[in-house]
Length: 113
Image (tube, rainbow, N blue to C red):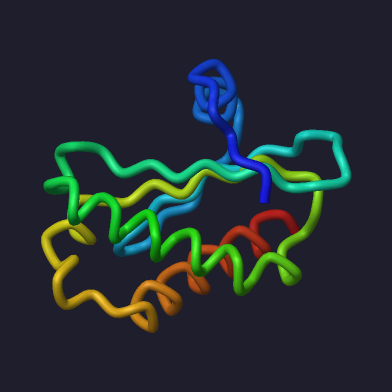
């Protein structure tokens, strides 16, 4: 997995990429004209404390790790946690996050078809 690190890279995707909403997350994506995906994981301080933010990022990374081979190559993807995820982070399971992200990615596939 190659991570997006520079603010400039994130801003390009936010401004010119497409987005799709879920209950716990928001995903921005944009083609990058390479043969691999680059990922960014964003959880703002408004979402919760450091424990909450790190847990949500771990859930996103785990989802990406397990589903990396199912995603189309050549995209920059940013996973953004919503405040609803932060409010429920103590009881939020991987399965709930997976269901939400599956629904969001299904919407992306329908948009691009």
